[in-house]
Length: 510
Image (cartoon, rainbow, N blue to C red; front, side, top):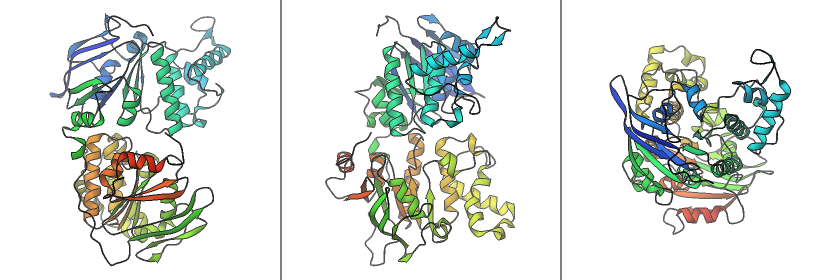
């Protein structure tokens, strides 16, 4: 990698206001050639505005930018792309009904006979093949994008960016919908791009990923750079403090241990088995207890939750609420018996994105109680939705706002609010804070703790050991579909290292 004397990118004193409200208050940012810079901050911190100015979507009110040592002031996204900046958004800009080759050439189809000539399809496929090889993707250029996995689509988007011969690539939340293996593959591509002297700005709420792939990290809060440094000095606690103004220890609410009771457990799972998925899984959850479920990818965490809720069947075993067994594969009965299930993919299974908040919140209750509730006065339903939204601290201009317009954290609060309309006694949370910023995480952590304090039993599934340790009273460690051990909060092994060792004792994974 050739080191350059001047930085690839320099942004100095960038300011931006909307309707007189300052959003950026003088952002300074530098990126070297061939460097990967993590760009982190909560919702409202100014990340998106800064990147939209860099990408030519917005104009700064003040400040200046330089790209490769020359003044840079794009009039629009096309100028930015021409200058060598490619922006890969969280919502990928691909047409699912078109082929990979068509997507890669949409902005500049090669033609026979000049600009007005016919499309040279052989050249389209040839160029697409070369672009796919550059990101190590072994697929036909003729396949439809809709047939690809999220990870493959992400790599197609990177291949598309590389066709413009970029100097700088902005990756916005690139791992949100990827598997562990796809993340590893993506990181390999990022390292390859770095070796080719391409600069990368990496935006993510996943701080572990940021620390793994980035050389430097810059932190924003309320339109100001609060901290920055090389990845070795920017430990997680320092990043969190820069983002929310408090230490990692203060992120998780203080909780009393659930009181010992002579009554039966609220939820009891015994001998749950399914060929190839689970073997003799068993655990109890007391009223007011948060039980964590820990394990590597493929350990069976989500599969167990789906079986408990009745979405998937099982070969043997029992699931009981207050000592009374549930019928297998019957989510309707699970809901009637007080179980709520927050799935790991809120955008597909949790909410209707193109409907309003007030439409989404009563949805489960309407489904459970049927047509009788549908005849209630709409104003009464709206009032009830408003109260639940207030309780869960959903932040929006109004309850009529489409859920698609909300941040990831507020979308997740809408899903929680939806289930709370049923007043459940058991809450299953599968990756409840995936893809949301630390500020929203703090609010959701406080809500989970409050629900447990009120007597709700919580089953918490998370890939973040810090989250499990910060909230759980006990953690059940799964490995390859079996319970390896149960670690209590008072145990010396109730640490990140302890959970990591326990969950990977005989397995492998990210």
